[in-house]
Image 1 (tube, rainbow, N blue to C red):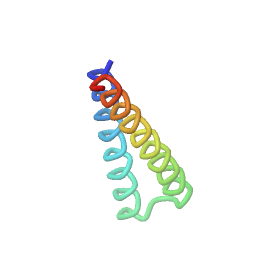
Image 2 (cartoon, rainbow, N blue to C red):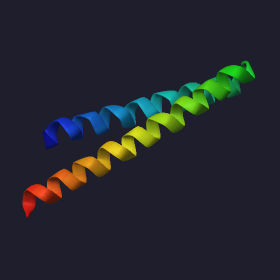
Image 3 (tube, one colour):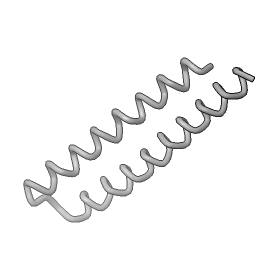
Length: 66
């Protein structure tokens, strides 16, 4: 289970990076503001999910170690 959570956390972090880079590219190309707002919301949501998965993985590892 811990391996799955680690993989999920890594996948979410890569997704955050991809959305962040897409937002930066959109901003540099003076893209539509609507797209920037959607990308910002997606990035914040993915960051929250990544933090949640990391906390769950740490709690799971801590409970198995006791």
